[in-house]
Amino acid sequence: MLQIVPLLLIYFLAPTSSTSPDIRLNLKHVDTGSGYTKLELLQRAAVRSSNRAARVFAGHRGFSGHITAQEPVEPHEGEYLIELAIGTPGQAVLLTLDTGSDLIWTQCQPCLICFNQSFPLYNPTVSSTYYKYPCSGKLCNALSLSACHEECMYGYGYGDNSTTFGILSSESFTLGSTDSAVTVQDVGFGCGVLNRGIFLNESGIAGFGRGALSLTSQLGVGKFAYCLTSFDQNNTSPLFMGSLAKLHGPVQTTPILTNPTNPTFYYLSLKGITVGTRRLKLPKSVFQLKKNGKGGVILDSGTAITRMAQGAFQQVKRAFVSQTKLKVARDLTGIFDLCFLAPPSNSSHKVIVPRLVFHFDGADMEFPQDNYINIDQDTGLLCLLILESDEETIIGNIQQQNMKILYDLEKERLSFVPAQCDRL
Image 1: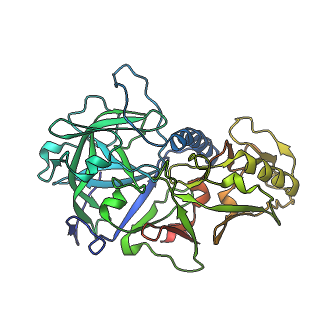
Image 2: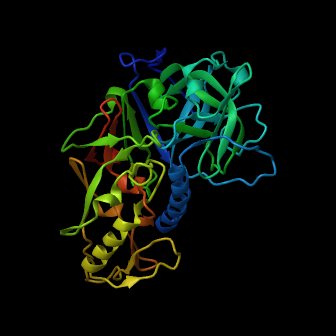
Image 3: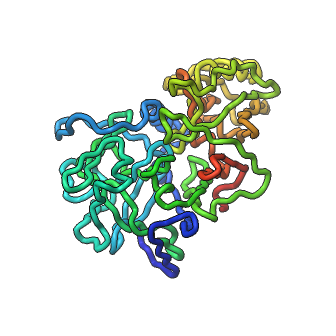
C-alpha cells in the first residue's frame, strides 16, 4: 500500500507553466518479483509487444457498443506502473504509465464491471476533494466520445478492445516519494465503473501522451524524463517531471514529430541504421510518416521489444547474419525472428556481436548490447531483440533501458544520454 509520510508536502492549484510541480516517481516493472527467468520475461514481453502493437497502430478510440458481464476480456499490455494516491484522504492506486494514450483513469466504486486489482477500489464518496467534472469544461470537450447527463460521461477504448466507461471527475492527486510528496488539486480523470481488460494488479492507466487529458498536460510540467533499469532486475526506475527532468553528459537531441492522425504519440525522424561497420542502404520511405497517418517511428513506454517496419527489418536481419560469425538457429518458441547458436559458456570462443546504431535527425542512438541481444545458456541461443512489423516502427522500452530520456513538451524535442539508471 502507498504510505505518504509528508515531511515536505506541497500543494498546487491549477498548475501553470510558472507553478508546475517538480516530481520524482519510481516506476515498477509489471513483472517485478514474479520469479520468471530472463528468457521467460522476454517471451512474456514479446507477446505483450505484439498485442500492444495492435493497440498503438489502431490508436485510442471512443467507446462503442455495450459492455456486458458475458463479454470476453482482452489483454492489456502495460509495462511500467506508477503508485500514487487520489483523494482526501489519499487512496492508493496503481496505474500503468502509457505514453501512447491521454486519459487518466482508475476503477471506482460503485463498479458494475471491474477487473481484479491489488488495491481496494477508489471510493469517491469518502473523499472531500472529489467532484464530477462539468460538461462545459475543456477536458470534457477533449474526449473523443462523451455524453452529458448532468455530468460528463466518457467512453474510452483501445485497439486491443480494452475499454473503460464512467464519469469524468476531478480530484487531488498526491505523487512523489514519502519525504517530498506533491499534492495537485483539480486533476481531471476517468472514474471508471464499466471496465474491460486483463490487468495484472493495476487499477487503471495514467496517460502520458500529448493531449489535454494526459497527466503531464494537466500538471503543466513542460518536461518529463525517465531512466529504465534492466528489465530482469527488481530495481525501480526513476521518472522525473518539471525542473527535475534534466540531463548531464554527452546529450543528443532530435525533434519530436506530430502525426495529425494520431497526435497523442511521440514520433521521431529515423534517418538510417548502422549494423556493425556498415550503414544500411535503406529506402527513405521505410521510416517516413505518410500523409494517411501510417508508417513512421514511435518511441513508446508500453512496448517492450522494438518492432521494425518490414523493409528495414529484413536488411537489419541480413546484416546481422553476415556479420555475426555464428550459425543461424530456429527459435522453437516462435517468438524471435532471428537467433544464432551461441557457443557453450565454457568455450574459449568469444562472441562478437555487431553494434547497432539508430541515426535520428541530429542524433545517433547507439545501443548497449544487452538492449538488443539476449544470450540464453539454457537454450544455447543468441537472439536479436527486434521483431518484424508491417510498415510502422515502435522503439520499445528494452531498447531504451539504461538511457535517460527526456521529453521536452514545450520545445517538442527528445534528448537522451547513456546512464546507470539504478544509481539515479
